[in-house]
Length: 325
Image (cartoon, rainbow, N blue to C red; front, side, top):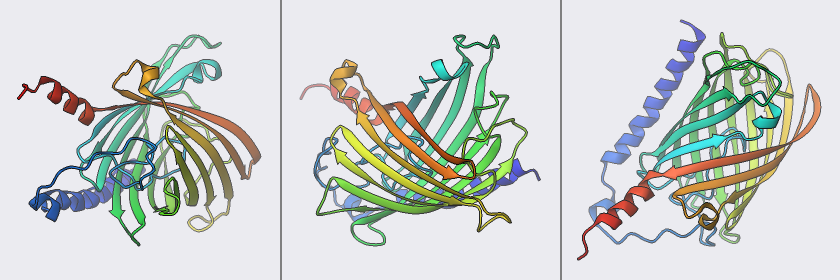
């Protein structure tokens, strides 16, 4: 059995275990389902009320850290996600576009699938012509509400990254990654805009036949990570800071330590700036400092993300087409 098959088998087994628990939650009626009641209105982004798992503090933007906060969309929400890497027009001979879907099966469980496509944009010095899919990412997230205490939530994420095709050498590191992560967040009643979080994760690496390049201060083998951070919600802006310690000492025969510090800000673009479209645009900017075997490295990162929510879209269509009483 190849490492590829082994990693996929582990991921599918873990996914079926979590899915079984999620499906039992879907079929088992809760007291709220047995006794109908009026649905409470959803507060707008940035509302000062305490955040819950039904109303995400902010959407996950890849690159914040290796796991997901224990926050899900409303049950039944199906989202299309698009993230073009606009900086590739000046930094690379090709452009990357990440596209995927996220589906909240219920209030505790969601599934995510993304693919990284690339195409040569012709603005660089290379005359090569190419396009394809260089990476597939599969994920699941199960949330335990009010655990271990009332003002806490905990999520268990199981993710798998699979390199594929013949992408440019610097698009991936050429490895399979299986990354289970546990993250706990605390919602502060005395400071409703503040959320702190911490967690632990593993990165189990498998070699593939796809060529790749490691970035600066990135583990080349299995590793364990400790994560801590905070999010401060000021409406359309979400200020974030994340610190991560990664080590290979506990699960490999050699020791390498890595330290990451990432402050950043996310801006939910108001609809008046997007011609009142149904798409939620999110802009992000962050700083990144790393310390490790390659020395100290400092850089910046930017994010542009579009999310199309079909639950809200279908509800609006239904209200528009419904006959007047």
